Image (cartoon, rainbow, N blue to C red; front, side, top):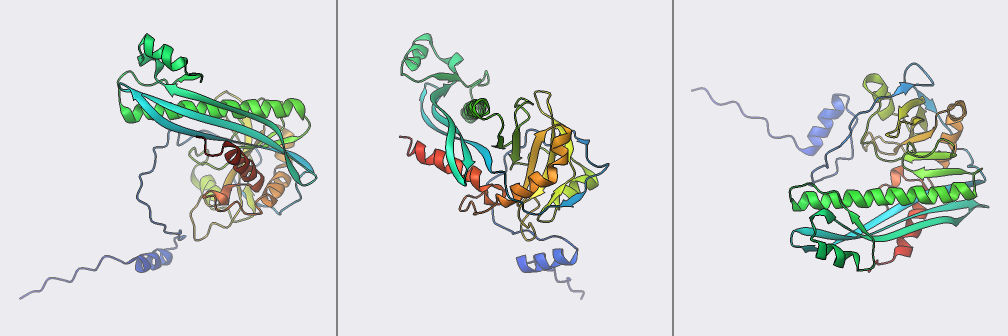
Length: 319
């Protein structure tokens, strides 16, 4: 009587990883997760090659940073305080600061902060609107959808808080540039919305939008530690072109493709392309001291981390 063949057991983690290694895979950290990944709004955007015909990996060595340079970062906090019927009311705090590093010390050169309420104001009755606006805090419209949905309503409110944070980051940057026009300003994030006349450097930690594809993307995402990609150009939502490139701050082997990977941005001019390796070198030296225990430490420059920690300390418990 024929017997049923024995089914191979489900591979254990060790067997799976060994099999993947034998297939030539680069193993990641294999950390457990249970929360769903938020949907990416803009996964791809066009780019144009600037420095080479194809993306290359270019070695970079740590270099001393400029003697005087500014660093900008911002924070946001919010709480869902209640509902007027089905209308959510959120309280928010946003703050942004530029610290200037001179003689090895960071000093505050610009700070902007704001406390406000957020609600779908168009849904309120005239009496509710008047009472809410009489509480002594500005009230922002959350631009909610026409139909009520508690989760969507809250998400629209959070989006308005993010817009407010971006606005005060821009205001703090403007203060700094007006006072210190000759100094570089390193921004935590993209600079596509900033005027081209500003001496700004963007360091983007998020990689939601990919600008490359095929072999170019593979070179970018598998950069070894201490290398940058060729410079390419992207166009921001305001229509301004910037030069940009990827830089690997820490070895990614045993982690994931984005570990220690940042994308640097400069104004689209000949100077920014010529200085890409030098700029990458001193950004590489800004990795230390480590920004741990921040969960983004592998992509976070220490002076940016110091600005954020200062903002959080000054915000306190935000009672």
